[in-house]
Amino acid sequence: MHPLLTCRRCFYTTHHPLGLTLDPEGICSGCRIHEEKDRLDWTARWHRLESLVEPYRSVSGRSYDCIVPVTGGNDSYYIVHLVKERLGLNPLLVTYNKYFNTALGIRNLANLRIHFDCDILVQNVNPVSVRKITRATLRQFGSLYWHCLAGQTVFPVQTAVRYRVPLIVWGAHQGLEQVGMFSHEHEVEMTRRYRKDHDLLGREPDDLLSLFDTLTEDDIWQYRYPDDASLQSVGVRGIYLGNYVRWDPKAQHEQMMASHGYQTAAFSRSFDCYDHVDCYNYMDLHDQLKLYKHGYSKVTDHASREIRHGRLTRAQARALVLRHEQAPLAHDVKFHEWLGVDARGLQFIMDQHRNPLFWQQPQPGRWEFRGLSLQDPHAGDAAATNAGFRATDTLERGGDGRYIVYGKGYP
Image (tube, rainbow, N blue to C red; front, side, top):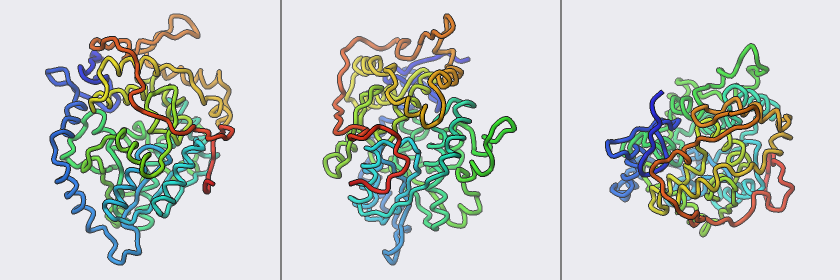
């Protein structure tokens, strides 16, 4: 195994699951590609985007110009703002029901489609199949979020083929933003290969079928990517706005909070309260599994991003990581009830996926963490701050805190 080396600027290492390299100065590829944001001519890049989307504009004005995937969190508001209010396109919004919905996420999604006056399609996969898939992926490779990632990345493509709307508009490319997998100037687009290798952890839907499992064809067919002939007949392509707009999630969310009514909520496991307010599990159990498998959690992603944008020093960021990364889970009981497992059984399954590079078990039932935040040789000491993020609401919004399986609207 190659030695674990840490970037001298951010907190990512050469063991990052997306792949990462360090240059002779000890700076990672993600930080180097981020530097492009301060030297590229973003006005010129916006004009390139305008030219790119122009051929897809409906001549009659009565058809959809593009497909835009959205949720009740993340960058959805800003993406729709750019597509509809700045580019003047008529998007069809699509969303995959992940079944881990918060009341705040349902509110944000309702406000999004109402405020921007857009049509929306919601995919609701049979909840029995979703539970079966979640049990299988949790046991096989330690992911309770595979079905969410699979659905969120394939339903827009399926809709593009079904409605014959070739252009899909995504936000930022994760591989570019985190590890510098590409340059902004490469203008990479969405591919089946990237979805499988990174979004789906290398497992296509058919890979989940096994003689030793309960999944059948009826459970997984809706997660299949359309075949090449179907894609080519429509000319489907998925572009990333982050190649043409200087992507800054904190600034973008705050703009949408001020102008379009986006609401946020605090999390115990990160200082960033803007991104994942639509889901109880992403910043909770899913985040815990990430820590088990990779030795770091989402707060490290947030801290590294804020270092790159110059809003946190390395020492301040490390203090935030140490404060948040092992915070107790807040919503695990909801998952137990939904999936039909008890706490001890779930913990046993999760423990099977602890990475021995970061976790040691000196005795049964006791684990010691040797994670990236404790190994970091470049960090100093500093008091943790709130990094300038602010919560405007709560995930439950006065409700009972259960998963909202499906919301048709919000009062």
